[in-house]
Length: 294
Image 1 (cartoon, rainbow, N blue to C red):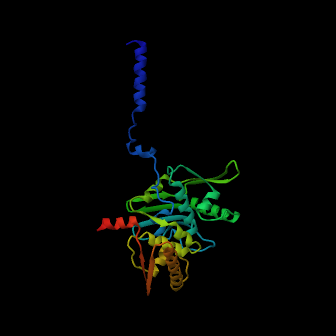
Image 2 (cartoon, rainbow, N blue to C red):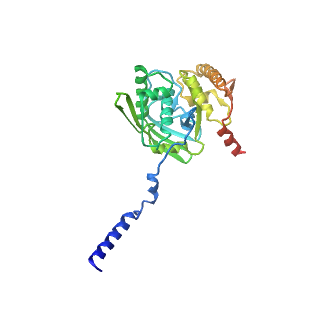
Image 3 (cartoon, one colour):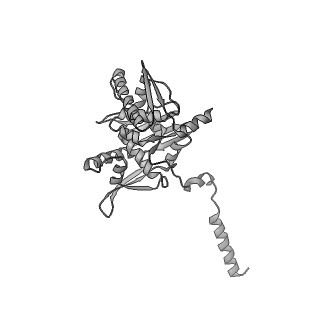
């Protein structure tokens, strides 16, 4: 074989060797796959049920809250949550829902760049120095979390926000650069998420237990009866007694009735002793879910 022919052969062999997949990489072939969140309308916030069927984002008011480490969070059966970080509230959930909402149109795990002004606007808040400071605290709390979650055969370990840093654009506008963990998509598998009516949730702003109640019952295609004690544990309330919680729960249920009725989504309840009976109107997707079970 001539020298030029030999060189050509060696070059071809080299091309084939680098093109050939390395052994042992078959299971990792999906590492470069582009992962996105399922899209949803502007009028709702799509939220994993783990955030709505547990005390992960508690029905707690303003004020200091403790830091916990590897504590088991009260949740409905089928959900296991271990949490490390400062206890979270419904305001933190508002911000996380909004970050998910803004990041849903791009690859999960890529940088989501958003101005403080836009974040506050989507949250339904005015752009003031006070609100920017509060927003900063929410984002920092969501970043400084560690979660171990298991739902059925799916699991997730990570934080609510993987990375965040602040910057300024050419107009000196404050920008958040947020990156979510691409593995978050497992929390949206199957029917493990709920579309929460954003208008109703905003109407309940400042009423943490009412927001929790609305989110919790939104996850139910068919409502079940719950004991007051069960709801007390699931929502993470700090009420000192069950009787105090029951009074707050009744006020919160009334608030959800008013906000839901105003949006044309009937919601009614009945408190019989220590049993809470709620009736809601299933969404279109929940009706399809119920039809499958027949």
